[in-house]
Image 1: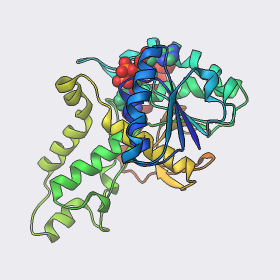
Image 2: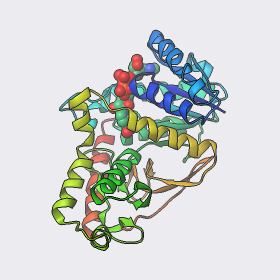
Image 3: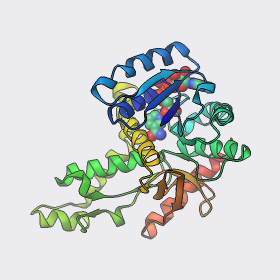
Image 4: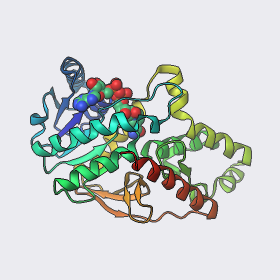
Length: 307
Ligand code: NAD
């Protein structure tokens, strides 16, 4: 099962590495306008196979994406310190708009997974190009708030002292500054955080909640300030989404896609199978969270006007 990755920068290379270590596809093709970077990253990641799984890793041109089940888009500029994801709209929109038709010309049956930021707006651009090429809705989606959801669960688990697999929690809306942490439906072994902490003989206060929220929302800024880019987290997200598609897992992921209810692409929990998004699921939110989700959608709709 072949996976294409367009954009062999930090994110594309780290995603290839995660895919090989986890043995998810049988073949990966890395494509980049910087051919020597693509060739070097492909050679480096190919040497991971003896420690992971026998995945063939090569670099190529868009024509070499033929037969890919999934093509991941990671081409485009990344944030620099002090920049928001939305600052990248115009430069990256033209890259996505030029890459998607080319990809679909060679791999018309591929599911497109967009990671390029601002991922919600880039997902809208990719959906529009794919629809012009006759691709059904649901076969194009963005990594959305999968990374933010992972950060929320991991930071909560560490704060409360429990295995992250028992923390169910979602971040919805924009993958960016207006994202919404759905505190009202956080569930740890069937209990709310304060209840669970108290059963453990401790406490989870409003101050703890503010601290967790601040760490989740500003996670990318902190990492970019320290090392210039984020890539391991999103690489794991890409590997997980590709796994769900290739193994037809029917998992619930907070991926980004156009929602008729909100009039833009944003993240909500969605059921994802081997054929892409099967269904958008409702999320149980309180009044304040609903209002923040609507504001997040309004921010995204405003940015759609410029692409
Ligand atoms: P990078 O600069 O290391 O790599 C980007 C690559 O894209 C470069 O190698 C460049 O040559 C290539 N590229 C540019 N235009 C191209 C084109 N038209 N065709 C083919 N290749 C092209 O950047 P990075 O750190 O890998 O980040 C890539 C993108 O992923 C950025 O937009 C970044 O913001 C985003 N990102 C998303 C998430 C997420 O959760 N969705 C997380 C981290 C980064």
